[in-house]
Image 1 (cartoon, one colour):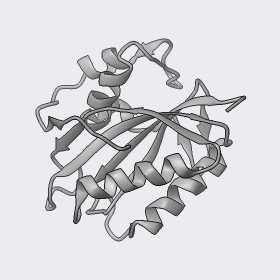
Image 2 (cartoon, helix red, strand yellow; image 1 turned 60 degrees about the vertical axis):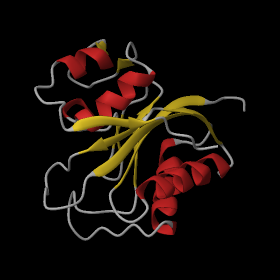
Image 3 (cartoon, helix red, strand yellow; image 1 turned 180 degrees about the vertical axis):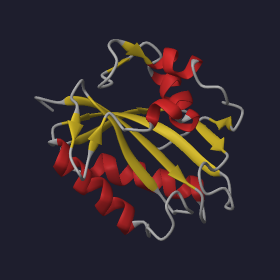
Image 4 (cartoon, one colour; image 1 turned 135 degrees about the vertical axis):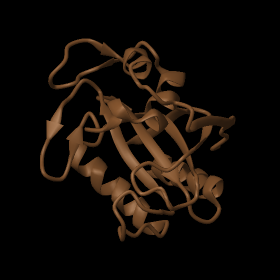
Length: 172
């Protein structure tokens, strides 16, 4: 692809065949014209955050080259979520799949529909641990900070014990 931007996605699932659903989500993302999945973090078993009366999650982070603009990319991720049975009944509640755009190159976006970098990624171990596995020295363009590295954000978190590496994730 030409004119691509490096994008990182956070994926999670805690309903049904979690690993199978994540594999299908990655396959569907990679099949979208304008998205080329490059690699995946390991699969992590993570304790729920926010609404805790639910099953544990499987989480991972994907690295991809993308030529779609951010809003079109959001539409594709939401289409895939719906295709895989995602409903939005309880905030932070159980879900078949969640696909978040964490980083879109060095671009910052702040609209009602989309915030990039993801607004809560700096406080979520289930995002930072797998992201640090892929790119620990990646600079995050945080609005109120300059040159924040993923590994720095991760070292500032008090609790990472709710994130446990499960195994390598094979999506191909």
